Length: 96
Image 1 (tube, rainbow, N blue to C red):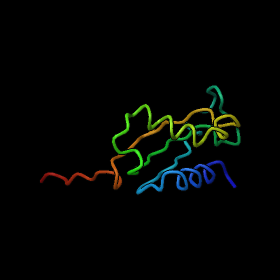
Image 2 (cartoon, rainbow, N blue to C red):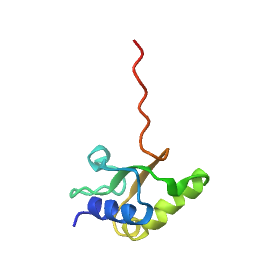
Image 3 (cartoon, rainbow, N blue to C red):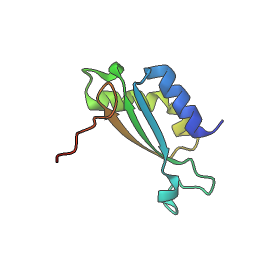
Image 4 (cartoon, one colour):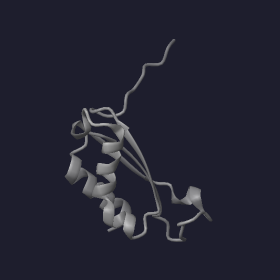
């Protein structure tokens, strides 16, 4: 199983998100610290879940980091976390 798939599985089990995106951005960091040829070193997570309702942003991020502790210790170098409102990403109608 890929690291990305493991991240999806763990976050889904832990937080039952309404919306979850796990994007491997490793190719954008070629040559940076922690990067390796095989990829799966730099990820962006966008997650919406009622689990985080009322919690400060720092607490939300800490919970995501704790859920992925072993991945962060075993090769994931960077993790960008975007907490979205429960229900998923907001879509704004285009003005005419």
